[in-house]
Amino acid sequence: MSLVIDFHTHVFPARFKRLLQGKSGSAVENLRKQARGWLRPFSRSLHHTQTVLRHLPDPARRKLDSLTSFAPLPGLLVESTAEDLREAMRDSGVARALVIAHPPFISNSFILETVAESDGAFIAGVNIPRGTRGPGTVLKRLHADGARVLKIHPAADGEGPSSPRYKALLKAATQLGMPVILHTGCIHSRMVYKSPELGAVEHFKPWFKSFPETVFVLAHMNFHDPAVALDLAQEFRNLYVDTSWQPAESIAEAVRRIGAERVLFGTDWPLVGNNISVGLRRVRECIESGLLKPEDGRLILGGNAERLLGPACPSNSQPSPPSS
Ligand SMILES: [Zn+2]
Image (cartoon, rainbow, N blue to C red):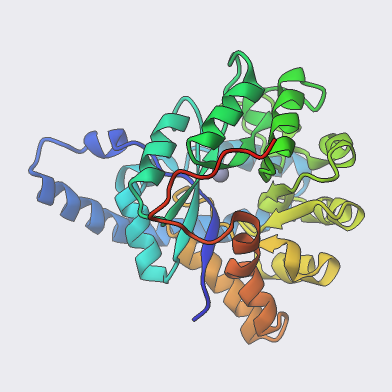
């Protein structure tokens, strides 16, 4: 089987797991494993529901977006740590995963430590929080410490495309040759996102034009509205999309419109649960039904990510210094 790289995951510190503590370590582990099984039917129906919400009229979709935005939380108690991710990767034959910070819940230092201990299985994605002084300098320092991808989440930060902080980060990422993963998709939940509407990918068109050398990965392919992400990716060669939260037909449509070379397998594990096997099944469904060629599948599942990130180097977690 070809190399599989998941380009979009999160690992959480063990504090969710600690909420279950009070029993011995192995008893907690057994309980968590059992609970994963109990939650499977629930996560299966959520994965399915999410892909049909886009077909509802806007007011109904907004209501359901905010109702379902807390659904992933119980799952984090039973599946969210680095060990849980290693187990899910082993079960599904995934070799490497990009683990992405989300301060303050998942700090950059926690991500870098987790990656350093992973023997090459994890790749670090960092997210520089609001209020950070000298964001470009901080990003350069994190890159020297092993960060490989910059995440920008405008909906969570409540900052738009003209933010000077984002401009400084994009400038630094461009100098470092770091791909930028941009949250895209307007998910109407003010409890989870400061400004959900800033998820709409079209706001960021000026960036794609101003930074033509920078690779932007449109995370979630703009969620409910992938056609807009694909319109932009057709216009700008520096745009990639990831497959998280997209049904098989959207993945096939992405390949038809922009080619397999700019589509990356990503799952957003552990949100909702069972994401890796659901996501893999969707790509494989496309191959089995003839919508994708096996070579397209090979690129999406790992070939493209390897080209962007370079091969794994477990014995050399300290990368070479930036060239400029
Ligand atoms: Zn994510």
